[in-house]
Length: 231
Image 1 (cartoon, rainbow, N blue to C red):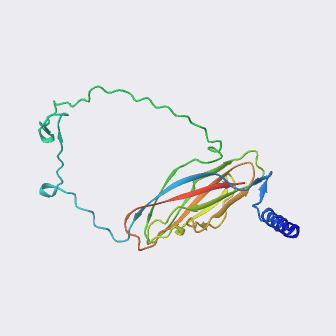
Image 2 (image 1 turned 30 degrees about the horizontal axis):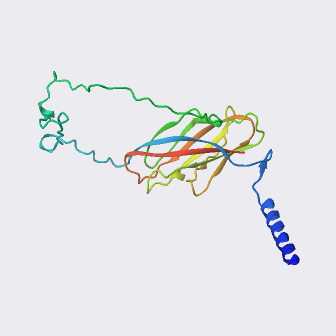
């Protein structure tokens, strides 16, 4: 019985050692983890090579007619919307404010990772490549952290036939000389790519380079660039 207890204790100790050895890297005794996230909505207006037919506006007998009826509670009589004239006012009676109480806890990491633009618009013609220099900036406000990593990815493709990796980016410290080549985005959650590894407060410019396939028809397409900071 005593031998079995000793073997059991040894097994528990070995398991604990494996857990310790396999734990995530740490910074200042804390496991490295995602601390904050920021997104940038990217809209692309494409002019196709062949002009697309413009949907005909409904008119005449093809127009959609909307009607609704109003009646007072408890009354069978109704007021037809088509019978309302410009001098008729429908006023809601006895309106009262509803008291709402909530306890809000500020997010300590809300400004840890920020961008100067939350929406970016690109315009281009199918079959061409366009570039927008410093389309937006990404700033780490982790002033007291000497080592952090910012990762990036796209939330989705532009379209089922138009992959997101046709959008590339060139990220560099604000004020520095841009790199000569751009790196294609990857579409999350297949992978994250590292935008930068640095420390303390830093601001990066992000150049966008977009290759629009010749087969993309005229229209508006969108995706979202996602940035996360880890330490």
